[in-house]
Amino acid sequence: MTALNALKWLVPRPVRRWLRATQRHLATWPPVGAVDLGDLRRVSPVSRSFGFDRGRCVDRYYIEKFLSRHAADVRGRVLEIGDDRYTRMFGGDKVVKSDVLHAVEGNPHATIVADLTTGEGLTNETFDCIIFTQTLPFIYEYRAALRHLYRILAPGGVLLATFPGISQISRYDADRWGDYWRFTSMSARRLFAEVFPPEAVEVEAYGNVLAAVALLHGLAVEDITPEELEHCDPDYEVIIAVRAVKPREAGDG
Image (cartoon, rainbow, N blue to C red):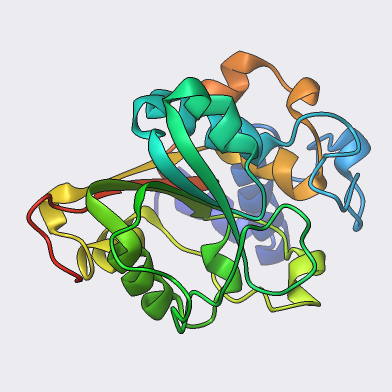
């Protein structure tokens, strides 16, 4: 019997288990149970309004970064959902006509009231650009909505879409028309390629674990640094963004 085996017989089994657990804990950093969560050690978020009451929302940072990269696409006749904020911000004098789509009556910004899942009242091949931010999760029949978005794009038109991969429930939307889906870059690529030619679909994702925690807690961009926001971790997709182009020779789709 070796000296080590002899020592095992001398040390009671519960003590050996405790020693092994302690060794594992000491090998982990930060030590298990010693993580300082500070202001985030709470079961309710810092803000339930996505950080809008603190400053600039974390997901809007990524949405606007994506739209800024593709600002040249925001031109001609442009359709946006809910309001025309991004049409004005990124289109400027490249925009010939700006329309705003809303699903129900009552939005003073809306120039078109229509349901994307039925497509009624939406004219074929009308828009050179559609800005479709943070809307897909609230449409149960999202495949039907994408088919109609494709149909109303003019040949050569561009759909700029964003949606969450990681997010809290949007209570405002859930109480009105529902909050149904979260996506990944993998599911987004397959989904949009069902409607657009696969080679015309570009998918990217933004975020990291800190950005995800900040968003879920309702922290604002001002609460974290630009370097922390810019770090990209493919396992933490806070925002997924898609640029999809309708071929110039396309028909109704």
